[in-house]
Image (tube, rainbow, N blue to C red; front, top):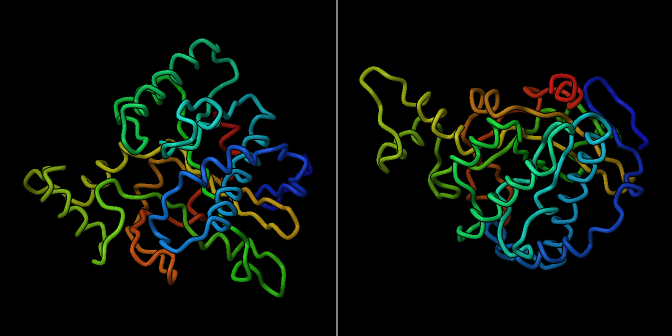
Length: 278
């Protein structure tokens, strides 16, 4: 791999050598992707966005697998012909884990996904995976555009103002604006949480959300013009949720309605830190 590092950012140059052939899986994923937030998104755009996500995942996988850690993409063991949403992007575990142990858990994951209409797994299974040191991972990709540049060059400081993102569990889109306080009220109204006298409802809402989150979130930015990937860093679900806000990401005709739990990339750490403390 052609890698260089600037502070805590890992830069993978000319990633084309890493991407052997992901067209088949990308086409299947794109074909089964529902235009939830972008109702007019073309098949070409869906394919491009799906491909970007797979490139980001492969860049992370190839980098992390150089060390004593294995990243196993969910797409490599799923059994639904890409017809359901992925419950997470992949699993991270020590290369000392026994292959039989991994297969036992991937079988359980596939069984739960098969029983789910949307492609989810239970919070009980997420907890069991974590306890057994099989860590769930989300790899979020973003395309480098002019807004990420200064004087024509990619500016890492600008990118670090962006966020780690995940959806809240109880509501993913709304015409109404929410913050964590009003979201906690929604959880109370729906019977999801109870607030003991004198307790902080926002703190309880944060703990409620954490059980649905993956263990690690990775941010990868892709400059398609020069085939370069920027692994900006990772964050644990604990640090994520404790620093999260609930917000919209306004982009006309793209994401006026979705709600996101978000925290700045600057709150994360280098993926090398993940490797060194795994």
